[in-house]
Length: 268
Image (spheres, one colour):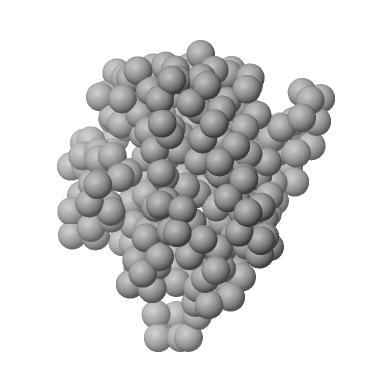
């Protein structure tokens, strides 16, 4: 999610993640209320109403599935789908990969152009260790504001081409909209390009590199809000995530959870 030159990374991180916060926080609403649908531009939003249970999202699973879009897996199965948004490398991806390897847990890393350009060896490691490296667009724009199909496609295609250069392989058609911003036409364009789109059902404020959550805060959110079928979003730039991931994976396993590949949600 962060590109151009290194000295701009921290500023870009703050700007992007403030926008992401809007998507994670969402708005409060009840299960019976009328909420936002995929028919207009919106931020992805969640309402956690009961600990250990899936949140209520601002678009239903059925609505999203029409666009090959998902945010949660089978909520009757204690399976977790772990994902990371990776905009730039600041030294924490390797420890995250170490923890994933120790526990035999697959993950999906949503990368932007900058990450592919500056951390190709880590991308190769992700692929070699069985993780999905997925498309988070080249420049991390608000894709819901792009009406031109060619411009929309270029943001995804540029990442595909860089991934091919780095790995020698075709990139999986797996996509996450930057900042959690979406619209019906946005999701349809991604579907037309052969992509499956994934939001998330659990995230916490882990992206401010100079204001990281404590270990206790991270455990409270990641353990307390985990639920069957959870698609978990973490940021690879988080020092706290690098510190606690081994412990979190252990606790999730102790709670009876197993781990699946994100693509399994869509049956591929």
